[in-house]
Length: 142
Image 1 (cartoon, rainbow, N blue to C red):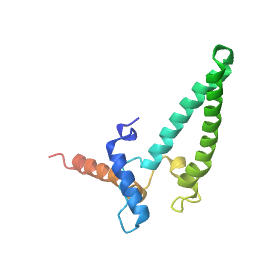
Image 2: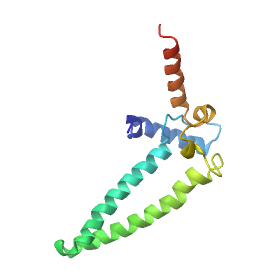
Image 3: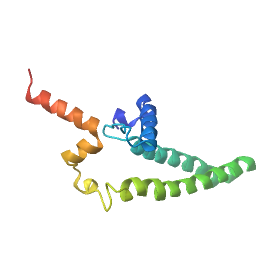
Image 4: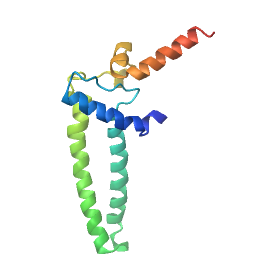
């Protein structure tokens, strides 16, 4: 996993800028590298959800080893995490990956394993700039 996928201070600034952009479309949207904040949130929500479901699932699976109060709390957490996961998939993931106007019907990147230069420049401008800078350095090794 690249370090860019980990939460960083810049994510908070990007979130503030994105909210400003949503409230006033004339305000520029934040620029992202390989991963947008939406992609990071979706990934870390998956990691968090798997951890919560695993821990509470094991508590419920081995119910004879734990006190009733702990099992009741684990049941509530397990149930609501499952509901949250389903809603996150249906609302968050489906919109951002499948139904967003820029990608609707389907973004073929997942099939091809490649992204066009134009799409890279438009959706991942910081990654595009880094690649162009590295390409320029490789072509001009002075």
